[in-house]
Image (cartoon, rainbow, N blue to C red):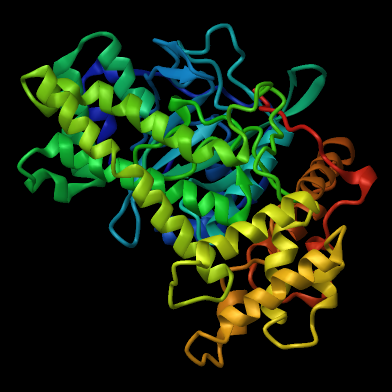
Length: 490
């Protein structure tokens, strides 16, 4: 079998205890759902080959192509605050790595690739619905400008998987800067394997944060970089109304990408306490809790790095605390500056945060749709366009009061003829609304109809553009369409 994929598998060259070699499961009757041709081109891959028989064989696990060195990665993790010393890739197989057209190393992984030694009794498979959800949401996040893993392909396996019911199986080909997680560091820390921790630290620095290698304390520089990356990432989630759903440490990427789209969702009506995940019964990972959970996760990373930060434990703890102490300021800087851009403000003033917080409080009390409000606010820069905004509020007078204050504030800004366009460039018209995702999944699973999947992808690829023929995708759900819970799909 020929392969047009120039694999260069650096992770497979690490010590054996970092992973287990395992071949992906063979799909009995695979059919191609979609190849992401634009991403394939960016990776330097031949999309025509991927869509052909040899490509389908690779994407469905039927053939290990030349250059691939498939493996399942070892890691641990805190799941809803409870530490599990061994998790690992229980239903994912890393086929290998490529260097893309921009010189960035990228993982190619089959999610739903079959049973591995880390499966813990699971079947290692994925159902079609979760595969389509991750494909759509990860690609939407990319188009929104949020750092994320991406979807290269989706394949139906031709087999059934058994969850609460019988479902069609599928495999997602996921692309990531890497699949190294906070839980990867925890795996070796739990075993007091300092040599492996040093090896992992050196590897991550070389792959993701090469400037840290020149620092006086490279481990400290790595921690600083991950703290900053996570602070900025979670700020970007909040600015588009995204709720990850399962922010366990094994779902916290060292590279700063959004990873593992399980019971994720986008908020409709603004409310910081919003939770969709069916398994998050206590609201640990609610929308408004995500910054503090990200800080909690990087604190767990800092704990694993203590032996590398300094020889003296007290000195190491002090270094870690100094690094972690930057998180709040970095998050607030990223979030507040993003919020100001959403409001059309450029020259920051002391009372701007109160202006924003007053708005968010009013939106919570009036069940105002988060995405629609900010998109329509751009049009309200022109006086006389208030009705579309007022209609979002249970009490429109609250909207009137806030708009008057906002316009007072805009009057203090430098003249900006492009303010409306600037606001529309950061306030999307289209997000992957939960009811649209569910309708798309039902069409594919129940009817074998992938036209809604393709149409949804096309709309979400241009989230900031007006699309007159697709305005229904901007509409919030009717009462009977509301999705109250999302599911992990494992």
